Structure formats: C-alpha cells, structure tokens
Image 1 (cartoon, protein in one colour):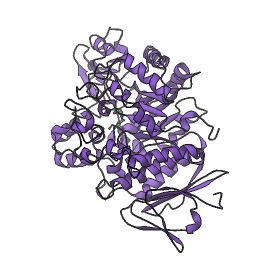
Image 2 (tube, protein in one colour):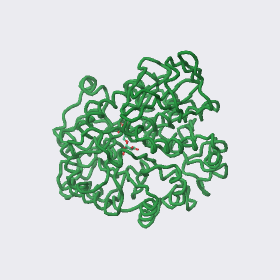
Image 3 (spheres, helix red, strand yellow):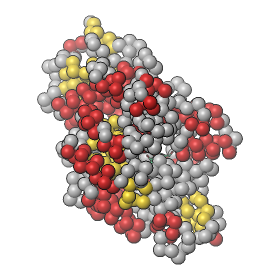
Image 4 (tube, protein in one colour):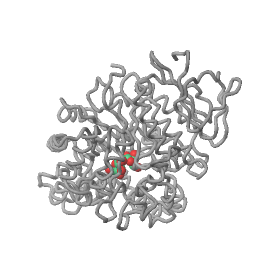
Length: 567
Ligand code: ISL
C-alpha cells in the first residue's frame, strides 16, 4: 500500500551516542544518568524517538558493538534501573526509545564464544562459524577491522579458524543454526518486554553466510560486487528468510519498529527489505547517499574535488522513487560511523558553518523519509581533525592504519583522509557549554573535546533565535505542522544544476518549493519569483527576487508555499 501512515514515518529520530553525550559520574564516559539529566533538552528539540548506541556489557573494543552480555547494561553506562527510568521518563514526554542491537557477531568475551572456542564438542561451538584447519587455509574473507584485513582467525584449542567480518574480537554468529536464532529472538523479546519501541539492527544485512564458503576472487568481487566486500556480505542466501522469521517471532502483534543498517544493499534491492508486502524490516539506513564523493575501491577516501551535487541529487531522488512504490525512506547525513555532517556536506569554516548546517537540516527535514539527526549536529559541531594516530580511539581507524602500515602504504595520506572521514570525528564529547571539558564531564574525557567548544556549544545557542539549534527546533515544528512535508510527493526540479538543489513536495492540498544553495557563492535560480508565496523556511532575513530569477545567498536555504499551483 502506498504511503500508508505509520507512527515511525511521521517521526524525527534523534541519535544519541551515550559514551559522548553527558557524563554523570565523572569517569569521563557518558552514561544513562547523563542522558536522563538532559531529557528536557532532548524534548525541547521536538524529536519523537531517541536511538541510543549499544549500552550492553562489552569490553569496548568497538565501543559497544562487541557485546559480551546481551541482557545487561555495562556498568560504565549505568544499571538496568537507569535504563528502565530512561524508557519511562522518555515515554512520559511522548518520546520513544530505540535500542541498537548487534546480532551479526558478539564479543569474543561473550560466554557463548568463550565456551565455543574451548572445544569442537562444546554445544556453543556451532553458534559461530568455523573452518577446520585440517581442510587447509580458509578461503579469503575480508575482516574490516582486522589489522591485517583478514576475516578468519586461527584458534588453537579447536584447531579451527573462526569467521569475523569485523575485528578478531567480534566473531560472527552462525545464523544457520536454528538454536542461535531462537536465542537471539528470545533476547530481542526480553528488551521489547521492558517497553522499548524498537531496534536499530546493526550490520543486519551480513547475518546470512554462504556456508559452502566459495573462493571469492578479485575478479568476482569486481564484476559482481563493485569491489565491495560489503556487497558480497549482504548477498547471503538466507538473509530474507531470517528477516521474515525475526519479524514473525519478535515483532508480530507489537507496534515496535525495526530499522536495519543496510550496508551493502543496492537501491534496486531495497524494497525487498522494507516493502510492506515483505514482512521483514520497516526501514533501512542505506549507504549510497553517504558514499557520494568517495573514490571507488579506496577505503573512505574522499575525492579531493569534493562531492558532486548532481550525484547527491540523483542518489536521493532515485531512492525516493524506488521507495515510493514499495517502502519508506530514511534520511541521515551523519551518525557515529560518519564524520560530522557540516564538515562533510557543508562548509565548517567560521564564515559558513552555521548557514550550511541550517541548509543541511532543511534538506533532512523537508525530504520524504524519516530523518535521523545525530547528536551535536544540531549545534553545528564539526570534525575534530586529529593530527596523530595516537589521538584516535576508534578500532577502525587504528586497525586500518595498521593494515596500511604493514603493507608499506602511505599512512600520512590515510591520516589526512581520516581528518575528513574518520569515525571519531563525530564521537567527540557533546559541547554543552564553554566550561570545563565543554560541560561534558568533570573527569578526564575518554576522547579529546573539540577545541571549538568555547564558541560552539549548547548554552551559547539556547536562547539565540539565530542559532543552528533554534533553526532546527523550528524546522522540526514545521514538519509536524505540515503533513505535506511528511507524506507529500517529491519532485526534483533541476537535476543538472551543480550548485542549487531545488525540489517540490506536494499533495492534493499543498505544494512546497525548497531551494538549497549548496555553495559559498550567490547563485541564481531561474524561475518565476512568484513561485514562492508564503516563505516559512529561510536561513537569511530576506529573499532576493528579480525578474525571472531568485538570487540565493551563499548556503541559503528556503522553503515556501507555491501559490496557485498544486504541483
Ligand atoms: O563495510 C563496512 C566496514 O568498513 C561498513 O559498511 C560497515 O558495515 C558498517 O560500518 C557497520 O557498522 C556497524 O557495525 C560495526 C560497528 O563498528 C559500527 O559502529 C556499526 O554502526 C561493527 O559492529
């Protein structure tokens, strides 16, 4: 059914990275009590859903994406009581809670794996994927966070290699085993029973493996999978069966939402995951959008020429078209795995930081699809741009650096790229105030605070009507007031214009024109200036209309009703 209404289609999601949001006990790590202390702030944004990154017990090799106990809260983040309070107090404010869940792999410290690795006879052995060493070396698999890039790790006690798509500390779970699947479903129900409103399923597209373990040759990877291991990993033979089963076993009869991180899924395949006829996921976080401007084949290497707006428009317009018929989109320009939104897609110089951040939020909040806003972006927080590998905490950056070093590659060039793309850029502490450690902690922060906290912080923006924060609050309100911005059709108006992104949103009752100048220069948009009547979004005080044109200021973003036209 096309565009049937659902609470999660109308929602704005606010992603909180608990480790860096607010520390309540001075150990330098953000925690649940910290989040609880800021509920008024969160509610003041107008968001409907909070998504928190993993807070389960974990050795923290990958900041919680290596879970060692699925059913308990890591003491660094607090207690189960804190979590229950968070659910209840968010609900009291009409905000739902989505928890991040990692079931492609566990930590190597998880009891299942600690037992599995002891002996082939242990009942836990079959909860993971193994390659017995008597068969020789396993066929190559890529381990994204492995210091050598390898996806199999030898384990002496079992004389076998275990599979790990990420780091050797993150062994992959064996979804072929029905017992494993039952354990996972039980555990997911455990959390739903606590009252949470859904899951963001981490790396969920990787859960099904071809256990005939074919050789994957470089040619095959190039031809069939565009040189991307993620594409191969997301093409497992039973993926859709497992997702259907998961939905049936866990979500049936609930109102909960399930959002899959869909690394490796191409646009054409997306409706098979989220089509309402499918009974699998509700939404996915696609990767094509955030890959715009990366050089092909290379590890998160940005094109020095920057990204092409025409490509950006093409990708988002195509995803809208594909999802229109079967599914529902999400929109995000940053998260805990991506650099800061304004540094990657806008201009984070003093001159244009605020303007370009406002423009990017206008995009996120006027497109069709459920927007996910990443904490700190609403202040215009920027990349920290670490100068040395020592400053990084992220396993991805550190291990890929090691891979490059071992292969004799150019580590300086890598570090240079990481300043723009590294994950730690978006993981620095939330900038609450100009006080000590930006008001994040009274202790020593687990990762450096961005020096610009004295200028960019919540306190400074709170009561400033011109701040990015105030602008975002206003946009979220607007989206709520105008259903056309949620369910209305989307039309791209200028596919070939390399500077301005122009589109309309319309339904039978209203039509809205959005113009976004993605450059630091004045730009002309040729159209009948009468095209915009009542202007309800503008990051500048005025709009210059002249003859048959609208002249946009640098990074100007406007949205207005299109009078007299229904399209
Ligand atoms: O291919 C990839 C690795 O370079 C990515 O697309 C990867 O699939 C994606 O980043 C997965 O991310 C998620 O799982 C990771 C965790 O580190 C991330 O923080 C999480 O978002 C492993 O659990």
